[in-house]
Image 1 (cartoon, rainbow, N blue to C red):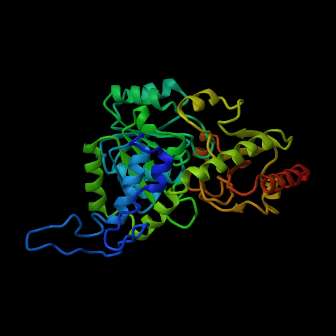
Image 2: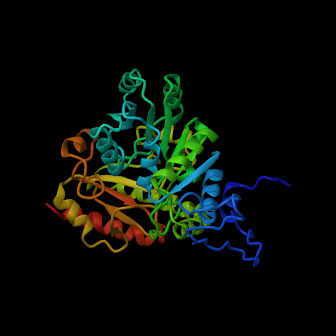
Image 3: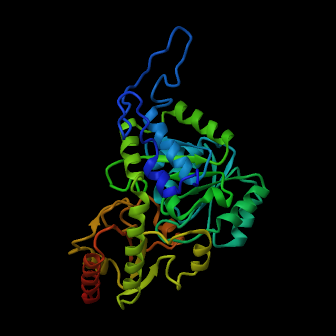
Length: 388
């Protein structure tokens, strides 16, 4: 018998049957903010929940195992996870990040740069010359987001890691869109993996959270120190809910992925659509790379309509199976207009450079019955096509 369970099994079984007091199958939530010392000068494993908490640790252990890392720090949000990674940098350290990254990450990096906490350079990771030029400045950290949000561009993790390590830089990968089900950046050489656990890991749009997984003990210990120092750690109750979501992760992702592939094909065939961004389509310019470093193509689909804002409005108004909302990764399908929603904090010029225009829509494909999603999308496309 194989002593090491498969990842899907580990996701389900993590921390089960660990309650020695009552024999509860699901471990209890430890909500206490403080813990007694065994005696004078005798500290127990837990003393204060900002520093460490049994429920949060159970989630961290699960995520570290799924990402095949040494350890994970669970944070209060996805942006707290990004901010935690930034704590590893000093004011004169250079951070390289993609020019088309998530709007919240872009805003944080830019704000920290403007106040002198670090130096930032945004580049197009598809441009090998731009990457080489940026690496000549000896960055401390290279931030990768693949697939990117919202244009689903793919970055060659292994190659960027090779070049970044050659100049002494750490590499962090935002793996929110893929989850450990479909992509394992640490196995490709990355040093850190960041997640908004709000998304697929929790999967039910009822928790805000984040996590950073480290490839080695030294980095993990630095993250633990900074998370405790800055108070970025997640709450026990949120950790409990997220761990509950992780138990169904692999089953959910199978349906998410199947529905997304069908949605991308449906959109690609309609005359009202100008472009579809989905790595699973053979027409995607980085389809081969996605196949190489991912075990699935994800459940996010972005596309541009041929018309402008009027067509976008016509498409959105009347949708029954897609809620107009930010975020992603829940069991329900969502639609977002990046220009006015997720990326509105980025300047119009920065959006233009990144390739984000007013005709772009982003879908988070849920696990509803495909026929219902298809009917809703088809009707929306016809409304858009009829809009002059």
